[in-house]
Length: 223
DNA sequence: TGCCGGATCCTG
DNA sequence: AGGATCCGGCAA
Image (cartoon, rainbow, N blue to C red; front, side):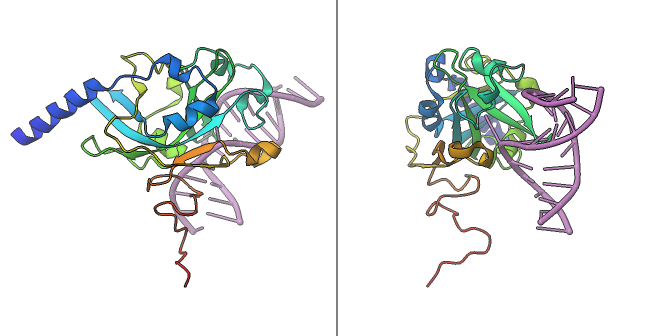
């Protein structure tokens, strides 16, 4: 049990080192922020527990002119937070079922946001409650609900924030592709605003051609 | 006030 | 392939 206490202390020390990305990080177009968030650490503090995951997939939603972005309808009660200070959470419910986590971006009051679509476990940290592959699953794994809408991700005491890429962490090899589930948005559906770490086994579908675990349902290498 | 359509996921 | 399940946005 000494060993386990040691591990707990180690985790506590590690998690104290995690600090939120500064607001200036988010105060840019989501097109710039989204790829920079891949490899960063999603941190959820709940009671005495701190859960950490490495973000491996994001999507940029770049403002009112982006027909896939909720702000396409302009300023409304729901989208208000996207026009506010960068660095806050925008959480909404999709299909009446799944909460989705976004980080509000800028510049300034431009209604930009980055959807956080997947995270992978970090060795040495608490195991995640559940797979964090896919935006709905990710919210479940980190216990993120609608109540966290508008929370400030830059507050050092926040229950939810994103910490910078660890210096010792591997640098992601990024792949860029079209966003998922936005076929209704015309030409915006084909814009490559989805970013993922090609070497992660925890990205959602559809996976890029030669990523780890890219084998779809029952497909077999050809000969 | 009512209706419609989602930035999804899981099962059959 | 389809259902779950509910909220925001828009038309009436």
